[in-house]
Length: 452
Ligand SMILES: Cc1cc2nc3c(=O)[nH]c(=O)nc-3n(C[C@H](O)[C@H](O)[C@H](O)COP(=O)(O)OP(=O)(O)OC[C@H]3O[C@@H](n4cnc5c(N)ncnc54)[C@H](O)[C@@H]3O)c2cc1C
Image (tube, rainbow, N blue to C red; front, side, top):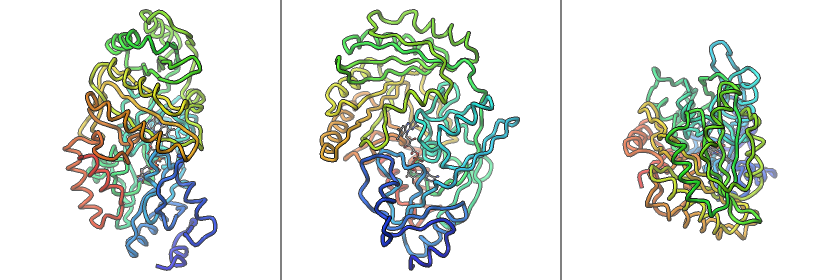
């Protein structure tokens, strides 16, 4: 293929390694300041789904591997690791049918935009916890979003996907039509063997009483905070999201226990908050709230922890063990982190999220623990990645699996599984059937690593 041929067939932009803006464009594919090994030879900025089809056909004609790039937020930069990267940024259409409570959303629609538009209409969706993330890869990997104890893992609220397949065909997959493809598009993440160009989403009534409460404790209170979290897990209603953030401060390592209450009314939120706080441990250094926090406002609270341009290494695990062991491991890791910007999250539920077999999303647990390594300088990459990988390895005893959206897919050796053995087997069969030439290069890699 001459790149001129490709350029003539694509209505959007084609940037090749011979173009002066190529290295800037390639670096821009990954949100993480730490860029992946450069692989892309050509970037196709698709104008629409037809461009995606044409680009995939061109890649097939010339034997190039392909990767879709949604928002480029996967911490490993996996979206940028193929010969041809198809950037979906322009596929950002958004239509809401208020009466039917359904949205049609392009993959590049961000959490902030979706949450903001829905909130204005009194509606909501289990959007992710950070506003700049696109729904593209978020939904494909599962999507652990706001109020997910009540609304479920976000991919279970996907009703249909439009997908460009490895042969360039564009089809719509639902529970009735192409159910295998629909199954895979809900949880396979980078292991998916097509490119989603549109999502149809089930919407929910906005929680008109959404509010947040925070209690900050020193690390020395870890046993009391873990006991309290266990008690809350046993009694809090599904509309509560309870997360303990571990962080470094000038006063030493701390835990911020955060309760996000997605109640129907402010009065209900007050009552729930009062119950949550009723047996909280003594000795909080700071108590904040309750404060009203509609979902768009939550993004103002989460954004400062993950500034754009910083370098990141992130990994996560599910556990059905005791909160105490997960919290101690997470806190200990943060105490030892080379960077003071690094932080951890331990989310506690009453029960593990349900896993209907209608979706590839097939790993969960009562506890979800994440370590966010955040630093600034290239020369600190090795120290921070070494710390991350060592810290996660210490969790072998109690981890039951991982989440593909925030998993360190580059970790040497075995990963905690991101899919169940049955899902790995089914996905591998589907990849062999729908992408026999291995056009979507990340898919085989994910199934191999998940099976490890
Ligand atoms: C600051 C931050 C906060 C986060 N918070 C959360 C959170 O609260 N909950 C959560 O669940 N996750 C969270 N994540 C993880 C995030 O949801 C995933 O990394 C997700 O993949 C990001 O979507 P993306 O479109 O940017 O993916 P990309 O990085 O663009 O792509 C990731 C993978 O998915 C593939 N892909 C992406 N879009 C498509 C598509 N349309 N069709 C086919 N393949 C596609 C790519 O080829 C690649 O293999 C967070 C990430 C960041 C950076």
